[in-house]
Image (cartoon, rainbow, N blue to C red; front, side, top):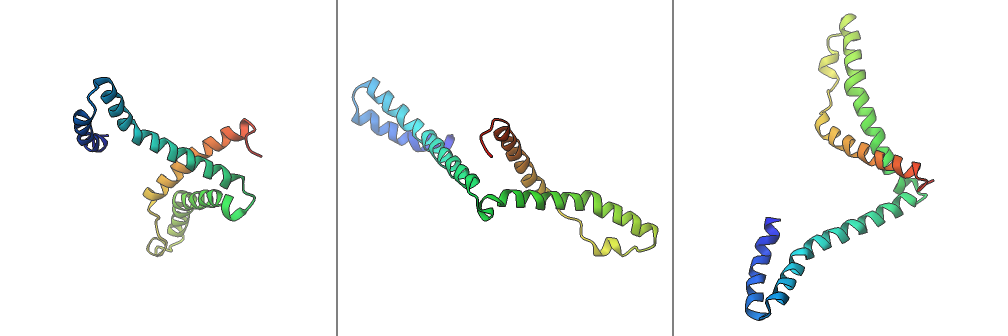
Length: 135
C-alpha cells in the first residue's frame, strides 16, 4: 500500500491546485486511491473465469495438469518419507551401505509449497463437488 500512496501523493497535490471544491477533491482522491484495488479485484475475477473455463474443459491436457502436479507431489512425498527411509533401513540391514550414496534425498521445501497450494485448491474443489457445482 505504501507504493500506491507514494504514487497517489503527487496526484493529490495536483488536485489541490486544479479542483477548488474540497468535497470534489476528496472524492477524486478517494477514487484514485481505490482504483488499484478495483483493478486487482477485476484481474482476480478474470483469472477465476479462466480457471472455470479450464476446469470445465473435457481435455485432459487443459484440465488434467492439476491432478498431474498433485500426483507428482504425492509420489515425491511418498518417496522422501516412506520409500527412502524404509529402503535405506533394509539395505543397511543387509549390508548395502552404498544405497545412501546412490539414492537422492529430495528437497521438500519447494515441494511442500506446491503441495500446500494443491491441498488448498483441493479443499475448494471438495466444496465445489459437495455443492454440486461440478460433475
